[in-house]
Image 1 (tube, rainbow, N blue to C red):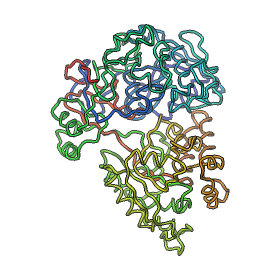
Image 2 (image 1 turned 60 degrees about the horizontal axis):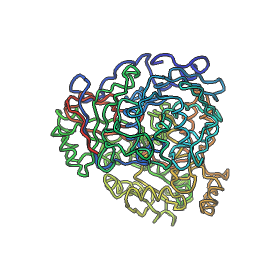
Image 3 (image 1 turned 45 degrees about the vertical axis):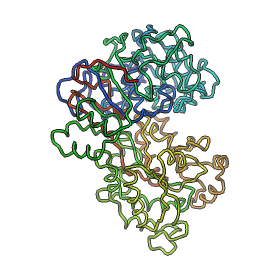
Image 4 (image 1 turned 90 degrees about the horizontal axis):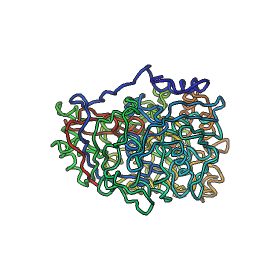
Length: 635
């Protein structure tokens, strides 16, 4: 283990195996060191100032439903402590859940019972001013289980923990969760779930105080009133009147149209923290809204801001930093667990033919797309759907190898010759279905730089798409609506929910996620069943596509994913590696063209910058500045 023993008996063996697959070394305790851009020794004090064009969100920063990566980084680094959290550092050491509130854990030999003892000395911020209890943790699961609170990733708990369905009309105790007293909580699972600790490390599972959160029964409403139990709280939260629901007002430091401001939580006790997880150098963090991206980066260069947020820098600024040796140290480019991909729909000609999908896998010039996207600071060529940071066992797996990722037209033509849509066997798709099919892509940069490259690649094997460039949200809405049957889409990426292949792949590859036929991120319809096709109004197309598959079923990883999930920890990765081969060689609904990076520019005031591998964003818990500024409210 990297830190103290925290699991006993048979459970310890399982968890040691789980952690051992993802990280090395025996001891990483103590304060982390900077990833890059360090200009001095990190010390306490100062305020990290940043600006962004928008604070995109799904649930108004209500932890029950919020699903954006930057918000998870905000919660886990600054605002909320849970049973498990992360070390908020890059690479393998930042990808495995670590105990935070937990002091002792016991897992039954059958993998169905998880018993936890938690700290009794972690306090809620003012004005709540009481200890965090096991009841607060249980209440978080009551919220997940309530339909009106819109738990976007409730699938990780509902149908997993006994008594959880995500369909309750109001919050009520969960039968599979037992609170023995303030510091003891037990979970009973329906089936063994090898990555359950990862799920407990997600923000929705973090404690929430019923006195305040219970005032809100609609998804997203709790966000502006969130009570912290971590190192920071929203500006002005200590002035909140919690004597009744009617007296509550949004925190002064919370306004997603103007910005958010975090300040130190006076109830935060340094002795309760693991320093490998939290350094808490900063006195505050300010994230202001600024629609002018040129102005944002000019302020960074002038030292009026400490760093960028998630906005793409202007090309001239990026070029200046990349070519000036004095500025290169302020570029923070870190590979997250995100794949950018091209989708092909299994039901739509000509992609209903596996040979055509295989030919496309071979022909795409991924290197050219990466260059069009902005180059190696922004992404690297991908060879698998699941990033290697999530599944290290496939790091050397490349089923469609080519020189530098530039594609292989000869191999593509050889694959196309096996297709019924190549009517004369010359390696060119020449049937009527090969022309005029919809290629849906974004009308914003850098996609407009890359769209012509993809069209030209497809033309090399006879595919003649009708390119339609639309707003990014339209690409998403159209591609995830099942009965639209979009043949091919471009301009989308997917980031893992947690660093485990189930956390990456469930929503985008498992047919269960198709759900209501809208918002189905399994865009290629991998594993679609007849009943789902009937419900979504595409049964005719479904029946026609089955003619291309001898066993009368669409390619699927559903059974394999369920098999892997139930395995002991030491066997999980090998099983998921087999699943990846099914995805890449049988399903082929994605062409994974790049693994994305998070790009941040900092100023000389940042004495330590840190990337949070789990959240794929800023590791606020370890960032330090030397500007000596007190936080000012930007909301």
